[in-house]
Every structure is written in structure tokens, then in C-alpha cells.
Amino acid sequence: MPTGLRPVPAVRRVKDRFVQALVCLAFVLAIIPLLAVLWMVVRNGLARFDLEFFTHSMRGIGARDAGGGAYHAIVGTLEQVLLTSLISVPIGLFTAIYLVEYGAGGRLARIVGFFVDVMTGIPSVVAGLFILAFWILALGMPFSGFAGALALSILMIPVVVRSSEEMLRLVPRDLREAAYALGVPKWRTIVRVVLPTALPGLVTGVMLAVARVAGETAPLLLTVFFTDSINHDPFHGPQMGLPLFVFDQAGRPSDTAIDRAWTGALTLILIVMLLNLVARAIAWWRSPAKRGS
Image 1: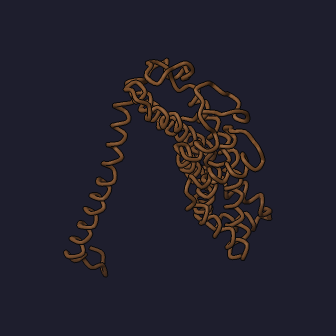
Image 2: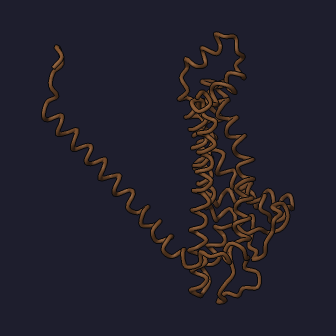
Image 3: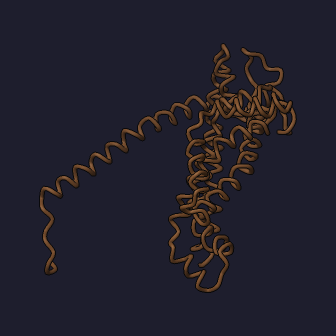
């Protein structure tokens, strides 16, 4: 044993093992409900996991009729999530950059941070009611996928801001100072040094925000409305979404409708997982370590 080092007392080793056991137990207790939900969704969702479900809509399908699918809802969800991301990610990322790089400690930054915290706690139905009152009733705009994307953006922006802010704060200060010492302007340092370094964490935060809004039903109920037909235009007319599809089918009085609801829930989970994998692959491909090799 090196000189000057004392052996760890037995009591401390026992306490350490005990805390480790508690952490492992807490992890197991937290993961059991998640695995149970996933198993139930997969087991029940496979009943209608067929080609017809992904290529047909519910147009002309009665409440007790077999067949039909969620193609119209899948298209709606993908377009609504894409529009929500196009609105929320730039706003959230630019806000996080301002809070970390430019407004740290300033009065405006504290005000912005306060309102971001307030927005984080807004119930989803309130976001839907706001867009319903302002966009649809006051301005006279129609129910549409874009209206739903506006409501979802209210929920997504604060998540993107907070996650991006934390990732930007983790970038070592030495990297910034090294760029400044070479005479690189601050904006170029942010674009070429800070953002690439924080990219994996930023992507994770964005995907967390996407998963947060992809399954929301209340805002879509108030802004998108229901339709059994395919609508590829998110700016005109009602447009279905997978959360709405699951909600609608789960309330119908037949086992075939319940099967469609389970398969819709499974499809939504798979879409979020696929988007997560694609985003992580892009982050790995564009990471500084990968480009440096």
C-alpha cells in the first residue's frame, strides 16, 4: 500500500454497498412499470400490425367494422411533429445561446429564464385553448395540422431551451478562450466550437422534446379536430394524428376498434424510437471526434 494512504474503514464500505443496493433497487422499481407498459402495448398492438393498417385510412369504416388503418393519422403526426420542430428548435436553441453566451447574469436573461420556467409548467390543454382562442376563434383560421403544431410548440420550446442551455454550459470554458485567443469572433466560436461540441447533448434534448409533444392529445383535440380521411396538407382542413386516432378508437364499442387503438399506440412508440435513432446517428456522424478521425 502506498505511503500515507489509509485503508477504507469497514463501516464506510458497508454504507457504500448499502447505498449502491438502494440505487439498484430504485432503478428496478422504476423500470418495472415501463417494461410492463411496453409489453402490454406490444402484445396487444401486434393484433393489427399489418400492411392494411399502414396503407389505409378510416374513411368508410364504421364503428364496429373490421379493417381500416391509421395511414391518415401517421401522415398527420409526422407533419405536425415536423412543423413543431421547425418552429421550436430554432427559437429554443437561439434562446439558449443568448442565455448562456450573451445574457448570462443580465436582467433580460433572468426575465427570459423566468418565463421559460413558467412555460415549462403550462398544462397541455391550456396551450391548446390558447391557440383555439387566438388562432382559430379570434383570427378566424381553420382547424389544421399547423394550428396543432403551434399549440405543441408552446410545450416544446421550454424543453428545448432548458436542455440546450444545460448542454451549452457543459462545454469547457477553455475551448472558448482558446478560440478567442486566436482572434476568432464570438459568433464564429459559437458556431464552429461550442455548438459542435455540445451537438450530441443538443440532439438528445431535442428528441426529449419531440417525445414530449408527439403523444399529446389535448392540444390536438382543440386545434386539429377529427377526420377519417387522408389530408396531406397541414395548413388546410382537419388532420388526424396518432394520439387522436388512439383516443378515438379506444372509445368505440368494438374489439376491432380497441385493436386499432393498441396498434396506433405501438406505431407512435416506434416512430419516436426511429426518430431518436436517426437523430443520434446524425449527432454521431457530425460529432467533433468523428470528424477528427
